[in-house]
Image (cartoon, rainbow, N blue to C red; front, side, top):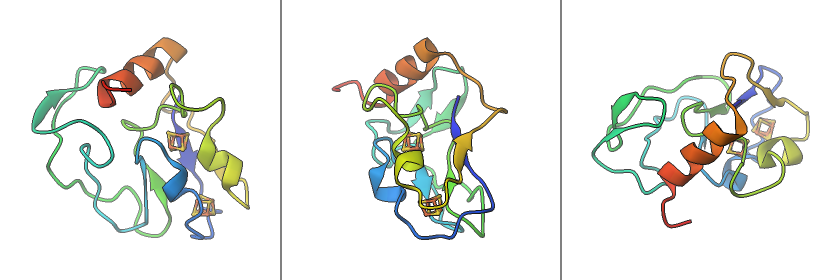
Length: 117
Ligand code: SF4
Ligand code: SF4
């Protein structure tokens, strides 16, 4: 499953540079599928969703740092544990029960975003 940032976030910014998928953004910032990935133009994600990787997307939170579920792989394919949770000083990066995925699905997502490793 993806990781989600709760409203206990103190906006310290420590997690953002640690994410290997560039799935973490500062509150109120737009996000893109292409940021920090190999995706560009029209693509169909491994979950079947068709998206424009270049298009700026609306922020998921205007108040706190947030994680894009479609880009988070729980760090699978890069690290043994979620790096955001490992560095967060207030432990507010927690499993997102609304975005449950298997390890195979997470690894497929990681390979899709980073075909060159
Ligand atoms: S779990 Fe890993 S991939 Fe997901 S948001 Fe945190 S650092 Fe990024
Ligand atoms: S490390 Fe934790 S407190 Fe700091 S911005 Fe990230 S989620 Fe928020």
